[in-house]
Length: 124
Image (tube, rainbow, N blue to C red; front, side, top):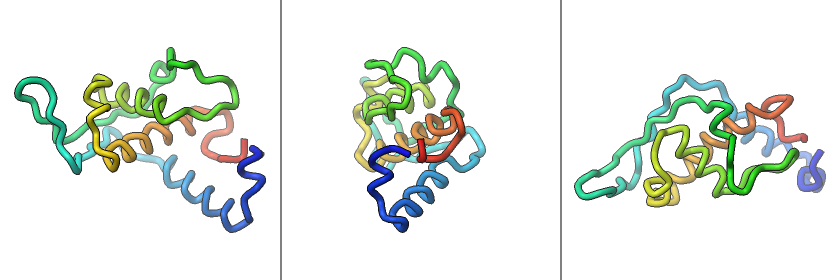
């Protein structure tokens, strides 16, 4: 169990596990995220939704900086993974509102958690 999880009360640990279960729940792909704030990109392009496919191993490769065994991804790494999952360049991802970025990172985090040995628990 990680040091941070060891410091949680039983109620907090249970709540954290419920959140992890929600994030990693089985989903039907692709998932369309309707943006709460459309993104203006390029000369005349307005992006109103992002379509996410399920993550693939290649989405985790060549993250900068690379993830080390036992490390959790940073917000920057989650946004990179999310961009790869929806096929959008980082310039589009950088323009997402806080709410939309949070939803995108949640999808990326769920994929990352499912890709870890042992699956979707927080007790590593």
